[in-house]
Length: 235
Image 1 (cartoon, rainbow, N blue to C red):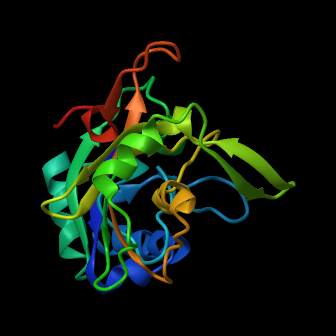
Image 2: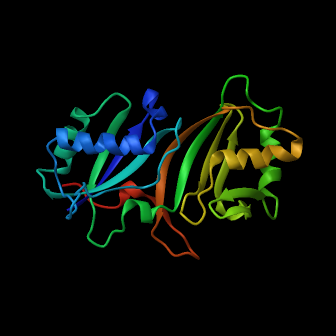
């Protein structure tokens, strides 16, 4: 059976990189006594896929990992066992059984939702209520993006699915392309927004929380985004 596990990453654990999170879950699964499936061959390892690696320093309320198990009592028991084997800063929220035809978590990623705040004393001198409107009104939002093949110009506009500024709470709400083809980061959006005003972000200016990761159950022309955690059933 394929299982999709939704978890939170918060507190001091946000400074742990993706590879260490993966190693943690490998050990936690063994401690929890989960009957996980291993690959065959000379060096077997647990069958495990993560939806989208989270940057170091970011918190998240909606991370996803897929594993395969040979047997289990129930999804509730898997959740309880993993949380019992976990550490402060990683909490399993939900476990679902995936249908056979479901794609793995990594291949299914369409977009991601974020809450973004400025750290104290590091907010640029920009009227963001006005800036967001002017930013979204642009026909193109071009930035230079460094890739393995060099630097290329990228248009952010098609990948910004939602962008709001809450003046009262001084925070952004964003839904951005997180697919392998797009993969826009919140810092890229804010840097591009403030650049015309002659402003630059201070070092470590942003406090970013990833709230959810979505998959597209519609078509490329008419996308329908739903949380990865809504795919599958409880048993």
